[in-house]
Length: 89
Image (tube, rainbow, N blue to C red; front, side, top):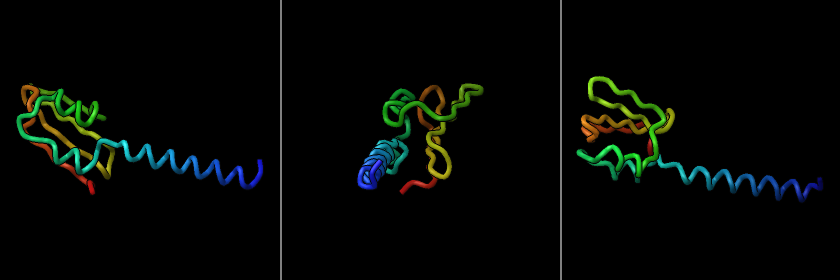
């Protein structure tokens, strides 16, 4: 492979990685759209399925993203009762 072709490949890979990062739903704009009382399905439509989810005694805790960038949402009867974020810009 010629040096010029290698440069083109690396530039293309860099652009693809940049585009993939832009599609991450765990961001400040989406966090700002969360509201108390939203349905679970509304949150999933906004953020996608949670990366972690635990349900006990009618309370579901969902976490989107991985540290250091996460959004945590607590649901009771499939309604948002609490949400918090870490590391969002």
